Length: 347
Image (cartoon, rainbow, N blue to C red; front, side, top):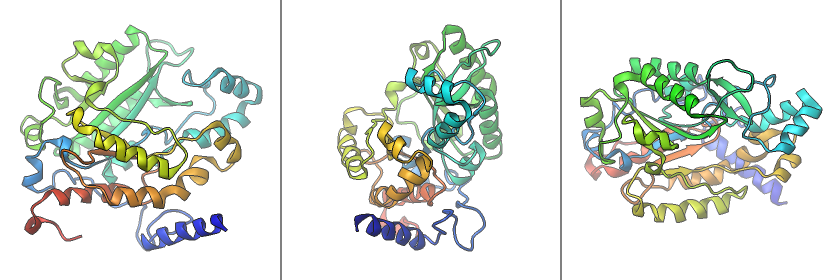
Protein backbone atom coordinates (compact mmCIF):
# COMPACT_ATOMS: atom_id res chain seq x y z
CA UNK A 1 0.00 0.00 0.00
CA UNK A 2 2.80 2.43 0.93
CA UNK A 3 4.60 1.83 -2.37
CA UNK A 4 1.38 2.52 -4.28
CA UNK A 5 0.81 5.79 -2.38
CA UNK A 6 4.40 6.81 -3.04
CA UNK A 7 3.94 6.11 -6.76
CA UNK A 8 0.86 8.34 -6.84
CA UNK A 9 2.78 11.06 -5.03
CA UNK A 10 5.53 10.99 -7.62
CA UNK A 11 3.02 11.15 -10.49
CA UNK A 12 1.24 14.08 -8.83
CA UNK A 13 4.55 15.91 -8.50
CA UNK A 14 5.52 15.51 -12.14
CA UNK A 15 2.08 16.48 -13.44
CA UNK A 16 1.97 19.52 -11.13
CA UNK A 17 5.27 20.57 -12.66
CA UNK A 18 3.77 20.14 -16.14
CA UNK A 19 6.10 17.24 -16.98
CA UNK A 20 5.89 13.85 -18.56
CA UNK A 21 6.67 11.44 -15.69
CA UNK A 22 8.31 9.01 -18.13
CA UNK A 23 10.94 11.50 -19.31
CA UNK A 24 10.89 14.42 -16.89
CA UNK A 25 10.43 16.78 -19.88
CA UNK A 26 8.01 19.67 -19.74
CA UNK A 27 4.80 18.80 -21.54
CA UNK A 28 4.39 20.96 -24.63
CA UNK A 29 7.72 22.69 -24.10
CA UNK A 30 10.79 21.96 -26.17
CA UNK A 31 13.63 20.68 -24.04
CA UNK A 32 13.78 19.47 -20.46
CA UNK A 33 14.88 22.66 -18.71
CA UNK A 34 14.30 26.38 -18.65
CA UNK A 35 16.92 28.62 -20.20
CA UNK A 36 18.80 30.39 -17.41
CA UNK A 37 21.95 31.16 -19.38
CA UNK A 38 22.19 34.75 -18.09
CA UNK A 39 20.43 34.61 -14.76
CA UNK A 40 23.26 36.21 -12.77
CA UNK A 41 23.50 39.11 -15.21
CA UNK A 42 19.73 39.61 -14.87
CA UNK A 43 19.67 39.90 -11.07
CA UNK A 44 18.53 43.07 -9.34
CA UNK A 45 21.33 45.51 -8.35
CA UNK A 46 20.23 44.91 -4.75
CA UNK A 47 21.40 41.31 -5.16
CA UNK A 48 24.55 41.89 -7.20
CA UNK A 49 25.88 44.13 -4.41
CA UNK A 50 25.32 41.41 -1.78
CA UNK A 51 28.04 38.92 -0.82
CA UNK A 52 27.77 35.93 -3.16
CA UNK A 53 27.73 33.62 -0.15
CA UNK A 54 24.26 35.02 0.64
CA UNK A 55 22.83 34.13 -2.78
CA UNK A 56 21.07 30.90 -3.73
CA UNK A 57 23.11 29.13 -6.42
CA UNK A 58 22.13 25.88 -8.17
CA UNK A 59 24.83 23.23 -8.50
CA UNK A 60 25.20 19.67 -9.76
CA UNK A 61 26.59 16.65 -7.93
CA UNK A 62 29.36 14.73 -9.73
CA UNK A 63 28.83 17.27 -12.47
CA UNK A 64 30.93 15.52 -15.13
CA UNK A 65 29.30 12.07 -14.95
CA UNK A 66 27.04 12.55 -17.99
CA UNK A 67 29.54 10.31 -19.83
CA UNK A 68 31.74 7.53 -18.48
CA UNK A 69 33.97 5.11 -20.37
CA UNK A 70 32.93 1.47 -19.97
CA UNK A 71 36.05 0.32 -21.82
CA UNK A 72 38.54 2.04 -19.49
CA UNK A 73 39.83 0.46 -16.26
CA UNK A 74 37.79 0.84 -13.09
CA UNK A 75 38.84 4.00 -11.31
CA UNK A 76 41.19 4.17 -8.31
CA UNK A 77 38.32 5.63 -6.26
CA UNK A 78 36.74 2.15 -6.05
CA UNK A 79 37.27 -0.53 -3.42
CA UNK A 80 39.26 -3.70 -4.28
CA UNK A 81 36.06 -5.80 -4.23
CA UNK A 82 34.50 -3.63 -6.96
CA UNK A 83 37.67 -3.84 -9.06
CA UNK A 84 37.68 -7.64 -8.68
CA UNK A 85 34.03 -7.95 -9.78
CA UNK A 86 34.66 -5.66 -12.75
CA UNK A 87 37.66 -7.77 -13.74
CA UNK A 88 35.70 -11.02 -13.41
CA UNK A 89 32.52 -9.92 -15.18
CA UNK A 90 34.03 -7.23 -17.44
CA UNK A 91 31.54 -5.34 -19.60
CA UNK A 92 28.48 -6.68 -17.75
CA UNK A 93 29.81 -5.35 -14.44
CA UNK A 94 30.79 -2.04 -16.01
CA UNK A 95 27.34 -1.57 -17.52
CA UNK A 96 25.91 -1.91 -14.01
CA UNK A 97 28.56 0.48 -12.67
CA UNK A 98 27.63 2.99 -15.34
CA UNK A 99 23.98 2.99 -14.21
CA UNK A 100 25.13 3.83 -10.67
CA UNK A 101 28.06 6.12 -11.53
CA UNK A 102 26.13 8.53 -13.74
CA UNK A 103 24.47 11.24 -11.65
CA UNK A 104 23.84 13.70 -14.51
CA UNK A 105 22.49 13.50 -18.05
CA UNK A 106 23.39 17.01 -19.24
CA UNK A 107 26.76 18.11 -20.58
CA UNK A 108 28.59 21.05 -19.03
CA UNK A 109 27.22 23.40 -21.70
CA UNK A 110 23.67 22.17 -21.15
CA UNK A 111 23.99 22.51 -17.39
CA UNK A 112 25.32 26.05 -17.79
CA UNK A 113 22.53 27.01 -20.18
CA UNK A 114 20.07 25.64 -17.63
CA UNK A 115 21.49 27.79 -14.84
CA UNK A 116 23.92 25.50 -12.98
CA UNK A 117 26.82 27.55 -11.60
CA UNK A 118 28.53 25.19 -9.14
CA UNK A 119 30.36 22.09 -10.36
CA UNK A 120 31.38 19.21 -8.09
CA UNK A 121 34.56 17.75 -9.63
CA UNK A 122 36.51 14.54 -8.91
CA UNK A 123 39.66 13.91 -10.89
CA UNK A 124 42.28 11.23 -11.41
CA UNK A 125 45.19 10.13 -13.55
CA UNK A 126 44.52 7.03 -15.69
CA UNK A 127 46.67 3.88 -15.59
CA UNK A 128 48.81 3.56 -18.71
CA UNK A 129 48.08 7.09 -19.91
CA UNK A 130 51.26 8.87 -21.06
CA UNK A 131 52.25 12.20 -19.54
CA UNK A 132 50.23 13.75 -16.73
CA UNK A 133 46.78 13.84 -18.31
CA UNK A 134 43.90 14.15 -15.82
CA UNK A 135 40.38 12.74 -16.20
CA UNK A 136 37.08 13.20 -14.43
CA UNK A 137 36.14 10.13 -12.43
CA UNK A 138 33.25 8.56 -10.54
CA UNK A 139 33.73 4.81 -10.44
CA UNK A 140 34.53 4.88 -14.15
CA UNK A 141 36.66 7.40 -16.03
CA UNK A 142 35.01 10.29 -17.82
CA UNK A 143 36.26 12.94 -20.24
CA UNK A 144 39.63 14.63 -20.03
CA UNK A 145 39.49 17.54 -17.60
CA UNK A 146 41.05 19.77 -20.25
CA UNK A 147 38.11 19.21 -22.61
CA UNK A 148 35.59 19.98 -19.88
CA UNK A 149 37.33 23.20 -18.90
CA UNK A 150 37.45 24.42 -22.49
CA UNK A 151 33.72 23.71 -22.84
CA UNK A 152 32.99 25.76 -19.73
CA UNK A 153 35.25 28.60 -20.90
CA UNK A 154 33.46 28.77 -24.24
CA UNK A 155 30.20 29.39 -22.39
CA UNK A 156 31.79 32.07 -20.20
CA UNK A 157 33.14 33.90 -23.25
CA UNK A 158 29.57 34.25 -24.51
CA UNK A 159 28.08 35.16 -21.11
CA UNK A 160 30.47 37.67 -19.50
CA UNK A 161 28.32 38.30 -16.40
CA UNK A 162 27.98 34.67 -15.36
CA UNK A 163 30.24 33.38 -12.57
CA UNK A 164 30.95 29.74 -11.80
CA UNK A 165 32.35 27.74 -8.89
CA UNK A 166 34.68 24.84 -9.71
CA UNK A 167 35.14 22.58 -6.68
CA UNK A 168 37.99 20.08 -7.13
CA UNK A 169 37.27 18.12 -3.97
CA UNK A 170 38.63 14.63 -4.70
CA UNK A 171 41.98 13.75 -6.32
CA UNK A 172 43.00 10.16 -7.05
CA UNK A 173 46.32 8.64 -8.18
CA UNK A 174 47.84 12.10 -8.50
CA UNK A 175 51.38 13.05 -7.47
CA UNK A 176 52.78 16.58 -7.29
CA UNK A 177 53.49 16.65 -11.01
CA UNK A 178 49.87 15.76 -11.80
CA UNK A 179 48.69 18.58 -9.54
CA UNK A 180 51.07 21.07 -11.11
CA UNK A 181 49.86 20.00 -14.54
CA UNK A 182 46.21 20.54 -13.56
CA UNK A 183 46.90 23.89 -11.86
CA UNK A 184 48.81 25.14 -14.92
CA UNK A 185 45.90 23.96 -17.08
CA UNK A 186 43.43 26.03 -15.04
CA UNK A 187 45.63 29.11 -15.46
CA UNK A 188 46.03 28.53 -19.19
CA UNK A 189 42.33 27.94 -19.91
CA UNK A 190 40.77 30.66 -17.74
CA UNK A 191 43.56 33.26 -17.38
CA UNK A 192 42.24 36.60 -16.08
CA UNK A 193 38.80 35.06 -15.41
CA UNK A 194 40.21 33.42 -12.25
CA UNK A 195 39.42 35.23 -9.02
CA UNK A 196 42.30 35.27 -6.52
CA UNK A 197 41.74 33.82 -3.06
CA UNK A 198 43.17 36.87 -1.29
CA UNK A 199 39.86 38.70 -1.61
CA UNK A 200 37.33 38.33 1.17
CA UNK A 201 34.52 35.78 1.16
CA UNK A 202 32.21 38.81 0.97
CA UNK A 203 32.96 39.30 -2.74
CA UNK A 204 29.98 40.39 -4.77
CA UNK A 205 28.95 39.98 -8.37
CA UNK A 206 29.57 43.71 -8.81
CA UNK A 207 33.20 43.25 -7.73
CA UNK A 208 33.68 40.25 -10.02
CA UNK A 209 32.15 42.04 -13.00
CA UNK A 210 34.30 45.12 -12.42
CA UNK A 211 37.44 42.96 -12.40
CA UNK A 212 36.24 40.65 -15.20
CA UNK A 213 36.49 37.57 -12.99
CA UNK A 214 34.16 34.67 -13.76
CA UNK A 215 35.73 31.61 -12.14
CA UNK A 216 36.26 30.75 -8.47
CA UNK A 217 38.28 27.54 -8.09
CA UNK A 218 38.29 25.59 -4.84
CA UNK A 219 41.12 23.08 -4.60
CA UNK A 220 41.14 20.57 -1.75
CA UNK A 221 44.89 19.94 -1.60
CA UNK A 222 47.79 21.57 0.27
CA UNK A 223 49.26 22.83 -3.02
CA UNK A 224 46.41 25.35 -3.13
CA UNK A 225 48.15 27.28 -0.36
CA UNK A 226 50.88 28.38 -2.77
CA UNK A 227 48.61 29.37 -5.66
CA UNK A 228 46.85 32.75 -5.34
CA UNK A 229 44.13 31.82 -7.84
CA UNK A 230 43.09 28.68 -5.92
CA UNK A 231 40.74 28.90 -2.95
CA UNK A 232 41.31 26.33 -0.18
CA UNK A 233 38.61 23.70 0.29
CA UNK A 234 37.95 25.00 3.82
CA UNK A 235 36.26 28.02 2.24
CA UNK A 236 33.42 25.90 0.87
CA UNK A 237 32.25 23.23 3.35
CA UNK A 238 29.89 20.67 1.80
CA UNK A 239 28.54 18.39 4.56
CA UNK A 240 27.53 14.96 3.28
CA UNK A 241 24.53 13.14 4.75
CA UNK A 242 25.52 9.71 3.36
CA UNK A 243 22.00 8.29 3.56
CA UNK A 244 19.36 6.67 1.34
CA UNK A 245 16.51 8.07 3.47
CA UNK A 246 15.07 11.36 2.20
CA UNK A 247 13.72 12.34 5.62
CA UNK A 248 17.09 11.76 7.27
CA UNK A 249 18.70 13.78 4.48
CA UNK A 250 16.43 16.75 5.20
CA UNK A 251 17.11 16.55 8.93
CA UNK A 252 20.84 16.59 8.16
CA UNK A 253 20.52 19.56 5.78
CA UNK A 254 18.62 21.53 8.42
CA UNK A 255 21.18 20.73 11.11
CA UNK A 256 24.20 21.69 9.01
CA UNK A 257 22.56 24.90 7.83
CA UNK A 258 22.10 25.82 11.48
CA UNK A 259 25.86 25.47 11.97
CA UNK A 260 26.74 27.53 8.90
CA UNK A 261 27.36 30.81 10.72
CA UNK A 262 30.32 29.25 12.53
CA UNK A 263 32.19 28.94 9.22
CA UNK A 264 31.63 32.38 7.69
CA UNK A 265 32.22 31.09 4.18
CA UNK A 266 30.42 29.68 1.17
CA UNK A 267 28.27 26.64 1.94
CA UNK A 268 27.04 23.67 -0.10
CA UNK A 269 23.81 21.87 0.79
CA UNK A 270 24.11 18.46 -0.86
CA UNK A 271 20.47 17.56 -1.52
CA UNK A 272 21.47 14.08 -2.66
CA UNK A 273 20.95 10.49 -1.55
CA UNK A 274 23.86 8.05 -1.49
CA UNK A 275 23.28 4.39 -2.39
CA UNK A 276 24.70 1.65 -0.19
CA UNK A 277 25.82 -1.76 -1.44
CA UNK A 278 22.45 -3.32 -0.63
CA UNK A 279 20.70 -0.43 -2.42
CA UNK A 280 22.65 -1.19 -5.58
CA UNK A 281 21.90 -4.92 -5.39
CA UNK A 282 18.18 -4.25 -4.97
CA UNK A 283 18.12 -1.93 -7.97
CA UNK A 284 20.92 -3.54 -9.93
CA UNK A 285 19.37 -3.08 -13.37
CA UNK A 286 17.38 0.09 -12.69
CA UNK A 287 20.32 2.26 -11.68
CA UNK A 288 20.59 5.35 -9.49
CA UNK A 289 18.07 7.52 -11.29
CA UNK A 290 15.22 5.02 -11.58
CA UNK A 291 15.71 3.23 -8.28
CA UNK A 292 16.63 6.02 -5.87
CA UNK A 293 16.46 9.56 -7.26
CA UNK A 294 13.09 9.83 -9.00
CA UNK A 295 10.95 8.44 -6.19
CA UNK A 296 12.53 10.78 -3.62
CA UNK A 297 12.43 13.95 -5.72
CA UNK A 298 9.08 15.20 -4.37
CA UNK A 299 10.35 15.17 -0.78
CA UNK A 300 13.69 16.77 -1.65
CA UNK A 301 12.19 19.46 -3.88
CA UNK A 302 9.60 20.35 -1.25
CA UNK A 303 12.51 21.11 1.06
CA UNK A 304 14.34 23.16 -1.60
CA UNK A 305 11.25 25.26 -2.33
CA UNK A 306 10.86 26.09 1.37
CA UNK A 307 14.38 27.48 1.78
CA UNK A 308 15.53 31.06 2.13
CA UNK A 309 19.02 32.31 1.17
CA UNK A 310 21.04 34.78 3.21
CA UNK A 311 23.67 34.82 5.96
CA UNK A 312 21.96 32.01 7.88
CA UNK A 313 20.21 30.36 4.94
CA UNK A 314 21.07 28.28 1.91
CA UNK A 315 23.85 29.23 -0.47
CA UNK A 316 24.76 26.54 -3.01
CA UNK A 317 22.36 23.60 -3.39
CA UNK A 318 23.39 20.53 -5.41
CA UNK A 319 21.28 17.80 -6.94
CA UNK A 320 21.55 14.68 -9.07
CA UNK A 321 19.97 14.71 -12.55
CA UNK A 322 19.26 18.44 -12.48
CA UNK A 323 17.04 18.21 -15.57
CA UNK A 324 14.42 15.90 -14.06
CA UNK A 325 12.57 18.87 -12.59
CA UNK A 326 13.16 22.60 -12.93
CA UNK A 327 15.73 22.42 -10.16
CA UNK A 328 17.91 25.35 -11.24
CA UNK A 329 14.97 27.72 -11.73
CA UNK A 330 13.55 26.76 -8.33
CA UNK A 331 16.86 27.59 -6.61
CA UNK A 332 17.39 30.82 -8.58
CA UNK A 333 13.91 32.10 -7.64
CA UNK A 334 14.79 31.80 -3.95
CA UNK A 335 16.91 34.94 -4.40
CA UNK A 336 13.73 37.00 -4.73
CA UNK A 337 13.23 36.46 -1.00
CA UNK A 338 16.27 38.66 -0.34
CA UNK A 339 14.68 41.65 -2.03
CA UNK A 340 12.52 44.26 -0.30
CA UNK A 341 8.88 43.28 -0.90
CA UNK A 342 8.06 46.01 -3.49
CA UNK A 343 11.08 44.86 -5.58
CA UNK A 344 10.29 41.15 -5.67
CA UNK A 345 9.63 39.64 -9.04
CA UNK A 346 6.26 38.11 -9.64
CA UNK A 347 6.71 34.35 -10.34
